[in-house]
Image (cartoon, rainbow, N blue to C red; front, side, top):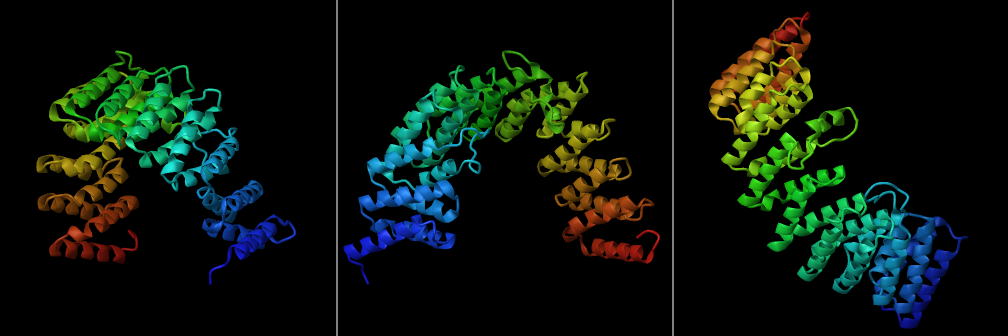
Amino acid sequence: MKLKEEQLGDVFQCLINRLSDEKKGKYSRKKCAELLGKLSMKWNEKQLNDAFNSSKDMFNKDISWEYREALETITVKLPGKQFDNALNYFISRFNCEKKGIYNTYDDKYAGLLYRIAQRLDEKQMNIALNHFMDKLNDKNEHPNTRIKCIRILEIISNKCNEQQLNEAFNSSMDIFIDKNDNAYVRGGCKKLLETIAMNLNGKHFDDAFQYFTNGLKDSNWGVRSSCAKSLVTLSKKLNDKQLDIIVQCLIDGFQNINGYDNYAFSWLFNLFQNKDRYDGHIFRDLLEGIAMKLNETQIDSVFTYLINGLKDNSERNRKLYTKSIGYQLDGVFECLNGLKDENKYIRELCEKSLETISIKLNDKQLDRVCNAFIHGLKDRDCELCEKSLGIIATKASEKQLEEVVNALMSGSKDKYYFIRILCIKSLGVILEKLNEKQLENAIYTLIDGFKDEDKY
């Protein structure tokens, strides 16, 4: 049955009255808010405005999802001027005292706008885009307000047309290259530029690449770090010339020249100790991110500096170079040597690196890796070797698998309890790869172990 306009008006007024009546129970008021949202397509302009005002008043007092969803649904139904006023209201209510970039969970109004932004039609998109760009470009606005607007712009950029993307890109670029602007806002614009650049080709993409590359020399650590991460993201679309430029940046970074301040690559190790952040990880992460895109010549150029870095007088530097080498196939033998290093941390890095690149090794290289880990089962880092051996064995050839199985079977009878346990765990990982004879031997070994109460 379809309600007449007068009846619909009565229903609306009843819902509004019950929603604002504090004598009513919370459950009843939430249900009224829910119905106001669900029936929002039936309200006229004045009713929508009244429903919006009542819903926002309730949302101010109570962040229950019923009020949030009602307010969200009603807002996207508002006509132009009312929608414009609603955006102004929500932005004015941002919680700017909370630190951080997005604060989705700490700021209920930012969270509300993030969700509303994903439901906008074309006309609302234009209104929202102008609002958020105006706030972003206004240096008098609180930095957290500007940053939250950036986050919303990221969300709606997927729905923007090329002209809108161009405008957002140019404004963001102006802020990003302005070293007098707030560093956190600049970092946020970097993320927005990255998002837009992946949706644009030609000059805009090239401009973004150039500015991110220049950003590696920025005076602010956060900007340098975020630019490196953006270059990794853009690497999927980089051409050979652009990759050559990045390789040169990496080499300069390793040598602390041409404006790339690497500060002894100490950031990675301070990270593990929760100390101050430096630049070491920036070039390492950039290398790891683009390694799969580099051609043989480019890899050789970088690898030369990594190998030389292993001879550095600083132990902390050697650790970082070892980590980077783990992502270069040609570094496999240096990692093998690293398994014997006196420093436990370097041994761990080499072990992890070999495990990571094992899927690319040829038979001869994989043979050496397997032998190194098999030998390691009898050494001080048997736990590290056991774990990696179990993973690498799943990629081994028939001959290599035979050697691995024999080593693990032997280890399962070792005089030390923890070595026996580790080897048995590794056997469990590779059971599916064993042939009938190997499986039979493994079962007999386990049965014998159960009979020996001193061992198990």
